[in-house]
Length: 312
Image (cartoon, rainbow, N blue to C red; front, side, top):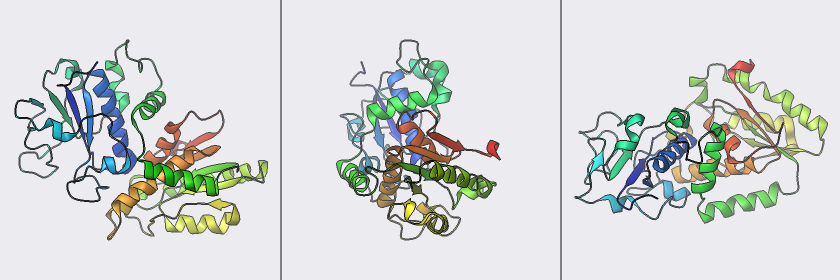
């Protein structure tokens, strides 16, 4: 049972949507392990923040607890790590006192007595496995199962986003056999030099699926206008996709001028959750979006495949 005076404030990591969500999920596990009440606050450093002084996380999801960052603005509370205090919790990267991110060592997690721990740093759950107590439900679970259980427990879409996903599913996917396909383009080439070679691996899997089931459809997730155009040409009426913001260059979409950041976050969520409702899925093992699709549900045997450089 978490004490009403022990909190973990989970701030934005400031990366891509599902990278930031992986950060959140890892910190939710830390909140459980340390018996603290979690509060998620994505401020100005979130690339999906749509307005000043808005908790960008709650533009997309319901709160993970009954408390908010405002409940932590108490001069009698103690905070860790430095330089966090009750009067600077809304500050983000770049303010004078904080020039580096504030990591805290995991081996001290159970010993911290401060009222509030603050985290703005990504920590993968695989790093936490050695400190999971045998009495915790996550003990002994596979990594994806830990993520899946945390998503099921804490992550609830805002009702308007859930309705939008349901409406698209009912209008376009319901009653169809669908292979979801996530193909990265744009800035991914900068971190994955063999991206185009990896993308070429998709075609044989798609063709085999359509040969095995000529009535099947393809649901494409991509941020690339060029990839969408290519798949339209190849798969014509078999192709299903959402109407979303895309890019024609190798720059991250969230840095594009005039981009609607909240809408972009909704579109990522919409594609991800729709893909998880399809019959099968292939994606990119180096992508947080593909990994999120994998973790949103327990996929049946032989219905899931993620390509990586080891397949080249």
